[in-house]
Length: 422
Image: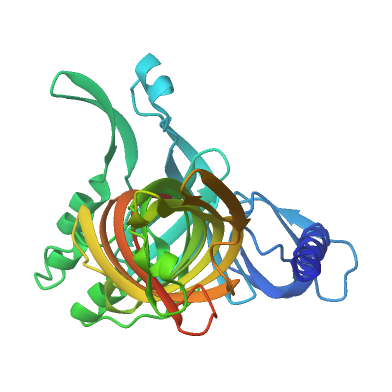
């Protein structure tokens, strides 16, 4: 318990420290290009922006007073190896929730002057814009003086089999196919590209290369991507004993029992090979309970009735390697790994009723000696996901849950999980 408290204390301290730093001014060396194309060196208040900045503060040369610039007052700026340009673009603010779209399902497009972050600078450029109100947007410009076009992705209401459903329109794929149709080898990759900075950056980079054009700048993006997953489902648990250490346990025929389970996980996705490989870590909770009634019969005047009840709560830490097939919509995946289990035994009872002629004697004892708190399991599974939702089928086989001499056991568990990633 103390270890867990220390762990959470460290996490809390890091969060507070990070939040405090995020509110402070951090001036780094940078430059701006004004509307007269003059480049000015100085210091820019860098905030490690989660959303594109609406304004920037700039200190020029030996000045002490910061100047504030909006997208309409400068052409571009650069700081911490991040490049931004000013541009008047269309921002799609179509509602994303079904109840809002049912009221008014029309597209909402606004013309605004914003700072766009440069992801790729070449003959064909790629830009990124993110705001709290409408989320992330990507823009592309073919040819140096071409128009900056938003790559459209939005939600809409569609009638499917007589019912209104919320669907996502991936119009950006058709836009990219039209833009890149002069390089036929790139077109098949367009429909495999997700609406993410990593996928679109790699696609535009390859397109420039295909066209024989040099890429002047590529933004530094995280080497891996992260997805948090929450899941819930049901487990089918079976426990079996063998050996000479306990005739009651080895004789018992424990039935398969079913219990609800829940988990939260972190998927670490590697960008190479079209994001097909990842490492998945999951912290889960799994209760279990089983039992059997054994009759040791000598004759009608002499026999024993043994009732065994076992149950517990398992905290499970899964680490697995995953391969996801890069399909367009439904994406099947397989994985295999290891589970470290902390067992909290809450039910460990054995009641023996001895019948000898007309007398009856009842004794109580623990059913399972040498119960192990920490165990390991091997696991493998498969599943399929569509966008952020999916279903998962997993098999897990564990080692001994007892350290008793001459008594061995194994656990066999099948999980069915529904999960959602974000």
